[in-house]
Each structure stands twice: as C-alpha cells, then as structure tokens.
Length: 484
Image (cartoon, rainbow, N blue to C red; front, side, top):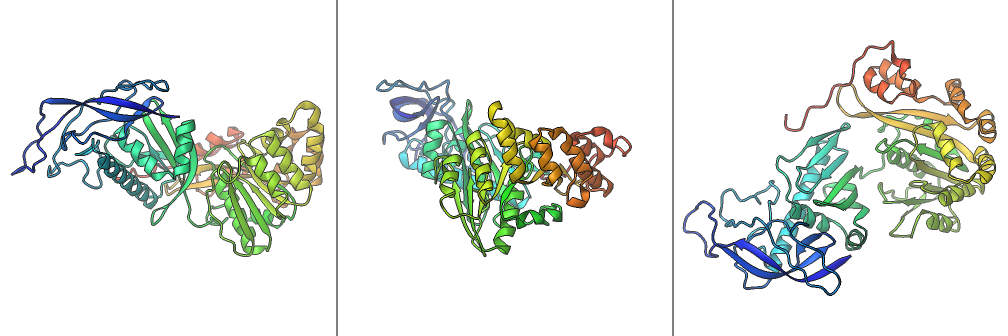
C-alpha cells in the first residue's frame, strides 16, 4: 500500500546552474538541506515532487530503508537522502552516456520533471539491455538493485553489464515498463507476474518484486512466433497428441524445463490443422496465438478473470473444443479439468512434477483419501498422455535440448492407474516404445549416444544414474562468456 509522507529532509551538494566556461573536475560544495515531499512504498521511498527553490544542479542517491521510516496513516515522516553528489551536464564522464546505465538521479533531480527524465532514461536503458540479451540468445534476464545485470544463456548466468545498478534506476525503470494495472498490483502485493511486448525488441514474461534492497525483476524471453516441435527438438511422435478430440494431455517438468514452449507448440499445431475453438487460461499469457484455422481466445488469470478455476468454469460455457490450462495449481482446477476431459473436450495442461509417474500421483494426491478412488477412475478414463521433460546443455555449448519422457494411455496404463499401482508405470514405458512411449533415461541415453549432451549432464538428471556408468565421463562444454 502506498502512503504519502508530508516531507523529507534532503541533504545534498549543489553547484551553480550556470554552464562552466571550460570542463572542470566535479567539485563537492557545501551541504544544503531542504524539505521535499516523498512517497513511501512500505520500506522503500522514492522522490515524488520537489520545491522549486531546490538548487538545479543537485542530485541524490537512493532513499533506503535505513533512511526512511514508513509512517502510520496521518503521521509525518522524515528521511535523509544519503551520499548526494552533483555532476554538470557537460562532464565527459557523465554516467548517463549510452549504453552505461544511469548511475543515480541526474541534474535537476529534485524537480518533478527530472523524475520524469530519470524514469524515461532508466526505461530506455532497460529496453536496450533486454534487446541485447535477446540478440545474444538469452532465455532469462536478471535485473537486481545494486547488482550488475545478468542473463541466462544455455542454463548459466553471465554478466551483461559491468557495473552495479543503483536501486532507484532499477525502481523507476521497472515501474515505467509496467502497465498501470500491473503497477497497482506491485504496490499492493509486493510482486506481480505479467507479460510485456516491447516493439522491435521482443516479448517477455516478467516477475517484478520488492526485496530489502529495492525493486528487482526477472524477465523470461518469449518467442514472438509460436514454436514448433522441430524447432524445440521434441520427438516427432508428440504430433500425435494433437489428434485427440477429448481427454487430457499433461506436460510436466521442473521449473525452466520448457513446459510452456511445448504446450505452445501443441496449440500451434492444432491451430494449423483443425477448425475448432481453443480457449487458453494462462498466468501470464506468454506466447500469442493468432487465429489460423482455429478461433483462439487467450485469457489471463488475475487480469481477464479472477483465477484459473473461475475461468475454467466459464470456458465450459463458451463452446470450446480445446481448453489449455497454463498450470493446474489446485484441487478445484484439477477437478474441473478432469470434468472437462470427461465431457468431450481436449484439455492440455502443465504441472510442476519430476516424472510421468509422479504426475499421476500428484493429480490423485490433490484430493482427500475418500475421493481418491473416484479420481483414479476419472483419470484412468480421461488421461491420453503425460509428457515429462528436462532441459540439458548441448555438448557443443550452442544451446539446450530437451530430454523427454512419454507415457501414453493404453488399457494396461488405465488399469494400473485405476488400481493404484502407479509404481509399475515405469515398466510399461520401458516396454512401450512401439506405442510411442519412452522413459527419461532412454531419452538421455539416446542423446548421449548421439553426442548431443555429455554423460555427466545426463547423470545429473537421470532417474537411475547407474544407467550411465559405462559411458565416458564427458560433460558439456560451457558456452563462451559474453564479451570473451
């Protein structure tokens, strides 16, 4: 919740607003103290406006929690701006020179219009950084107050800037990137998930949050065009999953395993090959799908609807053929998904699980014991496939590749689920290659044998690391650091 403090004490230096006759070193001048209004965001304060009498060449550093105390409603609050300094515009070492990040509030920082300038400059710099990360093949970009910007390439973090970012630059820049409604959520809850499209740069899934140093964010790079199974290096056998007209297909794996991309590729294939109504429920919307042969409607939980369960209830009344659930997060959503699959719809959904077997157990385990026999019966009838995947670095250091476990519905699989003998599903996958099934370890063995991934990387994620004891211990080569 944002509260307004009536004033704060600014302690800073200033110099004449007249231009220097010749370049000169930056000089500190006597300290001046004035009161300025501030806005307090819980334990973080930001300049909101200023008195016109404040010297034009003054500048300030971030207001920290140690300097400002959030007041109770109706109470005054005073904070001190620490370590202020001044810098003339004509200084050759101006920290605002592109592409260097803004180092602190610039000249005229205590004027209201200067905050607008800082915000615009910080936003422009962040956009430039995100663009550079996209061009270099990053999957994620980390922006943290007081830290250098880092990007994740091929599973590893690398610096993309060589200097720490002042907290106020991150704060104002991130807020400027967010739409107004997302800023409200950030102020109210301290974090927000959203999608951002930056023209000429790319599309991102963003998580912006506050921590004790300031405002931080992690951006996931999202492809502007829907991916395909070949571009994701997924088994061509997965194309058969898009031919089902009813039932449920679950795409699973740990965080950052490519679940959303696989789901988007399946939706894109349906969109190209079928003439149906597709409703997606996501949080946030990542890949945008234009209607090709299908009519595709995408809804964002928390923005277009209050939640997954509410949106799923509504979707059942919208004459859908295919329902896509970004994540089955709770019992109610799981119940509605199973009901939708039983009533003649194709449901595609993701889950955070480690394997196909644990996925089945997770769905059943969402329900109380007295309901689990009924749920096992529903799942045994409606389940069409489970795709569980992991991403591994390629051995040549040029990217990542998925290792994929596939469980397909057969009478034997349905019987094992119904009778709560899920521990035997792994054996079914081991012997079901002719039916399009495979275990994670079989996929890893194939990738290692073809020289795509290193044996050590395969051992790290294998269900049975002993499967790789006879293989040479050669891990993947790390990618070349940025700027090396």
